[in-house]
Image (cartoon, rainbow, N blue to C red; front, top):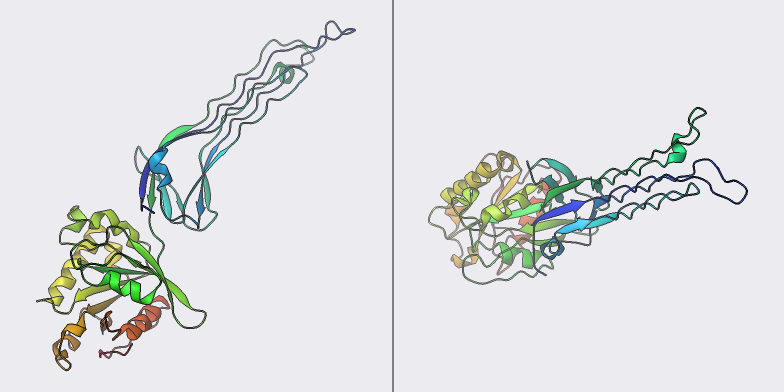
Length: 340
């Protein structure tokens, strides 16, 4: 299924039905009182979060949504039928914004979260509502009020516990395919991952967490370079970040600083999230030649784990660190080549 995480739509609530002017006219009541009924209310437009959805793809093909108008009132004080509502379903984690000023209308995080984005118009009152002792035959009725209409932006931000961040070909997709059932496309060229991938990691009996693999960042991603700017929003909700750096890089510390700067430039809160540094592809080193990597530090209390997704080395320790960070526990300070 194609992954779509942004959509622009137009919504229009139904208009309220008009009230009517009517008088009783029966065989033996030639001049009966007013009996004009009220108009029905127009239908509203709702947006509801649904955990079974994972993309905004449906809104790519249909962008205009209109609820039903309320029916007009009728004689014999019959009220017009209310218009039917329209309920739009979106994935959990969808932001609903006004297209005019990007003001946030709702943040639909949990399954079943719902917001009314266009309120239906009110039905007008019929002349029966205006009868008084001094005006027993009113000849006035109200029109229904228009339903609200607006242009909206929908933005999906994935709900994941841990986000994988790194340059293209850092091994993110390989890692998520090893530790979860996710099967992203993997190849030895940049930008293999063109959309985020979500996987569920089973960590021991009865414990699990969600892991998100983001398309690779490049220097200048926060300003729109590469693909990063399209997907950085998806890690805003993550609780923990794993900075993945190739161990064979000429300068892993510089790579780390570039990635951290991109995150901070996009949203300063990202750089303040708990993070783990994973030095990948250590299977490319001869055994016993990783001393330099083991001594590297990337910030106070930032655990560093040497891993190989190809051989499984260090994966167990990395999952341990992810779980500790999610639970707010202190990381293991000793940096060593872990076991799978």
